[in-house]
Each structure stands twice: as structure tokens, then as C-alpha cells.
Image 1 (tube, rainbow, N blue to C red):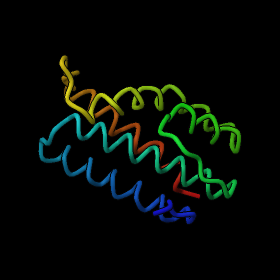
Image 2 (image 1 turned 90 degrees about the vertical axis):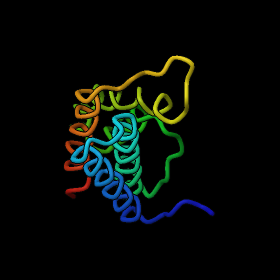
Image 3 (image 1 turned 90 degrees about the horizontal axis):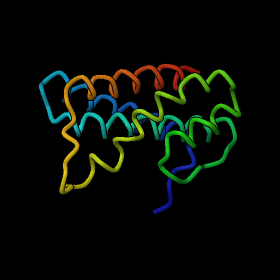
Image 4 (image 1 turned 180 degrees about the vertical axis):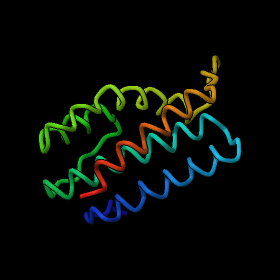
Length: 126
């Protein structure tokens, strides 16, 4: 099934994944899952933002890449590149078991969650 070409669908998914991360944070859930859901929320927010402004659906999962493309639309989005890179590092590491697990702690999960909120507040406000 092809991905939606309606940016509001992407924004809705971003909000839903952010809310999932919020529930986990409030109830002491798995920190790796909080980071993953935060990454997913940011990814979908960037993709929706690009779709809304360029009518183009970008493939890929790199938040750094998506942030750079979004910054081509509005240069003020460049301010999120370091935050995008921080959250991006947890994309693969939180999805699959590893011989040496990363062992995300509460502070790292909260940082991912906070970054997701900040980026979603900026991208979904328009």
C-alpha cells in the first residue's frame, strides 16, 4: 500500500506516536521505546512538513536528511539539526536486539521526548 500523499495524515501519525511516547514516559515504560516513538514522531512530522510545502513525499528515515530538506523550505529549521542528530542515533539501536544493548536511561529518553515535542510544536503549528 503506498504512503499517503496527505500531509495531515503524516501530522496525525506524528501526534499519535508522540502521545504513545508520552504515555510511556508518564508510566515508567521502556525508555528505548520512548526514544523510538520520539524518532518516529519527528520523522513523520518532517515528512508531513515537506509534503505540505513541496508536495513531495521523501523516502528514508534519516532525521538529519529530513531536517536539511525542511530547512531548505524555512532556514530557521536549521536550528534543529543537532537535536535531529541526537534522536536519529536511537532509530536502529532501539528497534532490534543487539549483542551489546545500548541501555537507554531515563534522561536520554526524556531528551528524545523533549526534542520531539519541540520539533512537532514548530512543524505542526502552521
